[in-house]
Image (cartoon, rainbow, N blue to C red; front, side):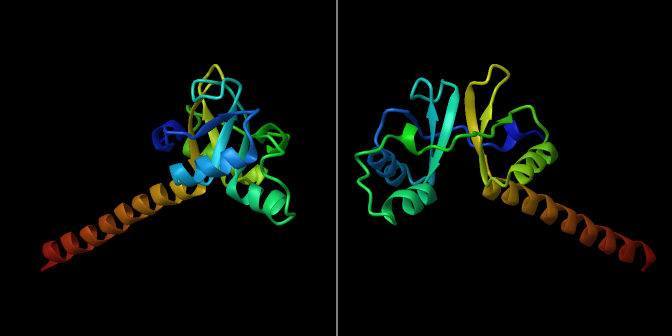
Length: 149
């Protein structure tokens, strides 16, 4: 299974010159915990950074800074970690673990944004796989009992 199979294809994006307040409002409106900053401001662009609700709270709200005085370009992290949509789930998990990130923009071969993958997405998929494995074990036990009487 590839990252492209499980990522969310609907991504909330902004251009780097939008205010942190606009990012917070957009997150609230879209019911998401992050925005991806792209070179075009839209989903068809190349990701430049990510800004999370946690970033806003810890860096701006807790310090009582004016959210309109800073752009998302000012606020986004310096080093963006992406994962390729063709990357295997195992390799994607390893990359995220290595870098200590809970969410990553998913890019195509040209580096354009195609989605986002989060730890929550991965846990959901793995839980479904574990449920299927447990059902397999139960069915095997039932079939064996049936055969042996």
